[in-house]
Amino acid sequence: MAESAHVVLKAVAFRLLGHLDLYEDRMTVLVDDPNVSNLVEVSALMDVMRAEAASIPQLTGLWVSFLISHTEIVRTLVIGSRPEASVFDQLEPHTALLLDLESRCLEIATGRRGPL
Image (cartoon, rainbow, N blue to C red):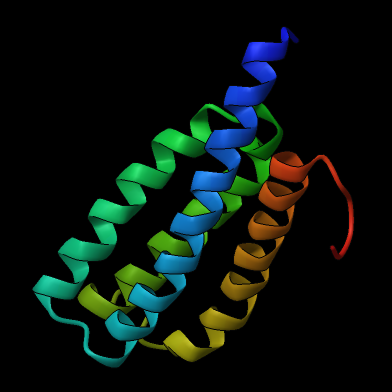
């Protein structure tokens, strides 16, 4: 990979890391109060993150899992399509995916593995 492309990839990973942090905060608000305004805000943030994640090939599989998990939570909150499943049961694995994405973004952005 050319040096300039590597620098861009690191910058996008760092930007995605910040958006993932914001997503975590906004999802907490949405879970506490699943109204249209909160849903629109989280959906707009997901659109931004989707574009960023799409430009980082190393995240493809993890991003798809995260996106599916997000969609299932929103469906449960808004549509109630899975009444047998509590949204809180879905949050634990979703949070684990979020933490994995944050970790991978940090690795890509810093070039380091593991805790800083």
